[in-house]
Length: 462
Image 1 (cartoon, rainbow, N blue to C red):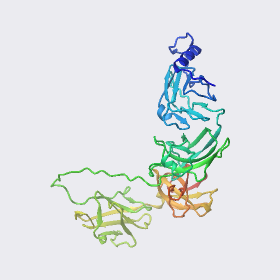
Image 2: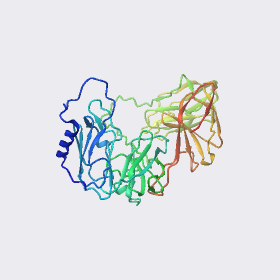
Image 3: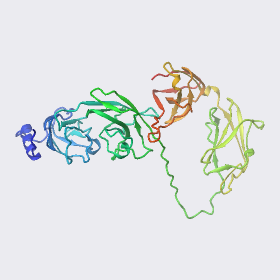
Image 4: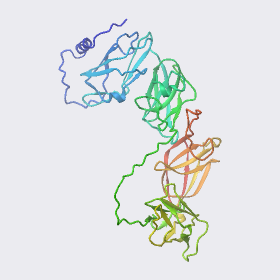
């Protein structure tokens, strides 16, 4: 049986053992120290069994400090109160507040908190292990976490394991174990007690519970059966509901009697040219409604009115889109007759206007020829083209080839959506209602560059 030793006595013993009568001032000069601190002595020793004390001492080969301990330290199994941890010179002391469970393996993972004093070298992933029973548990579990909607990684998430398998446990109980997701989306648990667990993904917060359906969350439909060789899993994180940002408007009690009440608008042509792939857009500073659709006329250079174009306002009422099957390289005029729109107070445009423009030419665009050598069309794949983290185009794939005749030059990211319900968009998951997993998106790691007046051949693999 290991007898409890006072921390003060331990510090004296370790100081004598490590430093003797040596000068404790860190030496100067010489080559730069690039090595992290190494554990020299631990009381009780690392991986000790039948531990009865709640006080521990770790001594290293150089002077150490602890940085960001609250964010980095993971104690497993989860304890109600984190232990009191302090440092001085080459020593780190640990004192548990809670009683330790019998026949339990404990690990203290310091993450990036343990640093040497001289050069701030981090002892990455330093772990101290002990057991209150006869053996050290050696169950392992690892896997990968992916954000379902984008195929990307979010290293702010954590993986939690509950030994209470009831579905309500993630809402009510503290997890038995938890670990971080690294920068590549990987996670690993070590020294787990054997048994069955429910695995979840949640943000790294104090409660470690799922208490906000607008936060990232993920779950496995099957239980995790922990052994020495537990199978790896991929868990997909999703937001069940999107956060609604509340708009705050500045209140004012005075109005300028000289305020210009006339509606103003803006049309942003690119060098006087209209994109063949997009509607012509008119933006307003205020919410408007179309007062007279006949007062918005798209005509040719002879003022002959065109047929087949459409008019629509966005949900905010500040953007008017004129949709048309634009021919390439042709001149147009847009006639806006006074009063074509009005705001809620009846204010309207001050005068009529006529704007001349050309549509872009065919050689302003590139042709895209995609090849998908390993595509599985039975999974209903959809090619998503991404610009500034927004999906700007989606193309359902029914074969291993896709040709897009016109595409705007630029740099884009690609994703593959596996569209389970075949509605053309990504659909989120739901745990509470029907345990429905989200649809899966794969991120294609290499972006593409589209050149104008060029046949851009792109092979997509993952």
